[in-house]
Image 1 (cartoon, one colour):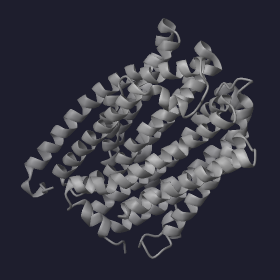
Image 2: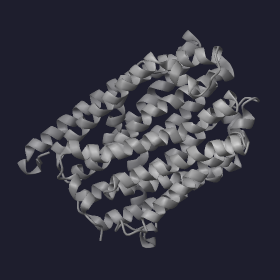
Image 3: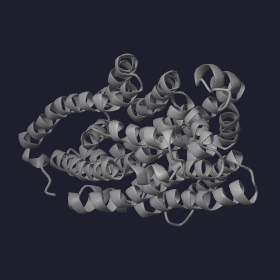
Image 4: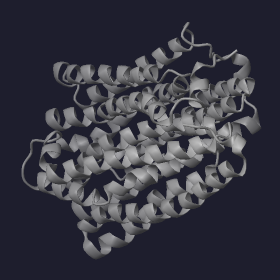
Length: 461
């Protein structure tokens, strides 16, 4: 029988303290994970060749698709898991957890197999790697795929540790992999002289260790949760429900991968390898902004899901508002730092002066013009995923990356050249924020009506 410590507090403790308790470990973990993500580019840019950054940037769509497959199952099953706990259906929650484990092996495994079979055509035809960048891109991606199954399963299963009432342990999982990666990178790249291959090996080894730790947790005395074989026998309806709930974050991540393909090709067309390298540097910096927002989402998700399942709508609304305020404060702080000190952040990745530095500074200042509005948009998308409404969540997820960004990326460069590529991002942020505000206003009114319709549904925060 599942212990109730984590579930009980989700429905009773004060929202502000609860959100802090669940979000801060996730934010710290995601910040460390951000370093985990960009440390390869730092070492490659400083110790190998700036074109190595372009190589990692070119293959990022494939890595994002692999991450998307992990999010599809990990977040989808965890959201449904939290809702079922809130409803008091613990046997069903255990089955969902087992299905999550099985699907986390199956779906990312299919993605990895396809990538191995069509590796060269993907790099050349789909991703558009130039002759200069191709050797870096192929070396890095091939090694990353060797450990791809662990990079998908580790983070996917880690969501259940948080829902088990142990957010600090979940944070430790993320920190463990990041620290190992940071230690191994200089050893493999400089001491062993493995170059960009060393960066890739450091990444997959650290991901494998994180996976081993997660599996150890679910066989330890700290939890009553277990991945039991009987619950891993896949049933179509339950599997489809998990996929439906997780489709919004999957679509967001997959869309980012698709957009990256178009973006890289457009950058090549209007600015060449140097433009791709500059955008790779800028994206690495923006990860420092995006990852903590995902950590905040991870902290808010079980609180929103549990209380929605328990019909404590006042607590759902308060959690959403607290998350939005926190996210907005954070992105505004990041916006100020980036606009004031762009050269400092660029210099972390490359000491080169001249054209690369100038283009990188221009890129980051333009791309972040609407950054203060991004927190609300991301939290809103996560809200619908948390309450089991995948359609609305998918619409909000895709609005920025597909419905708006792709058309703008096709149109604006024809008018403004390379500057149009950079302007497409803030223009998409603006439109997505308007759409999110419209949809969320209607949703929050509905929550208010439900909470006031029956006094028994109200719960003090």
